[in-house]
Amino acid sequence: MPVLLGLLGAPDQTAARFTEIEDGSTRYRSGDLGRWQDGDLVHVGRADRMVKVRGYLVEPAEVEAALECPGACTTLRGRGMEGAAGGAPTTSRGIPPAG
Image 1: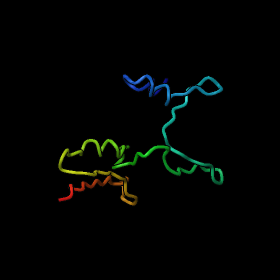
Image 2 (image 1 turned 180 degrees about the vertical axis):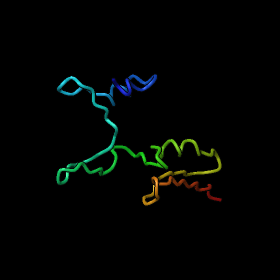
Image 3 (image 1 turned 135 degrees about the vertical axis):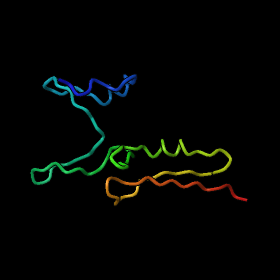
């Protein structure tokens, strides 16, 4: 029984994430990167910019878009920071216009 059949309303994303392998079964491409080390699969990062915040995957660009402040900021950037328990906190910074 499949856990998930696809991404609701996103056929292009479903096709990119759910791929068929040689034996006819379906594989889900999560975006996690890993490698084998001494018989163990070791997580080494992500194929995209997503960071985990308290168990949720967050795309920094989405945070930046939500925090845009037209006319009040010239630059706004979000980034993940390593080291917090439960995931990386996301920080964002707005830089006011000169003058």
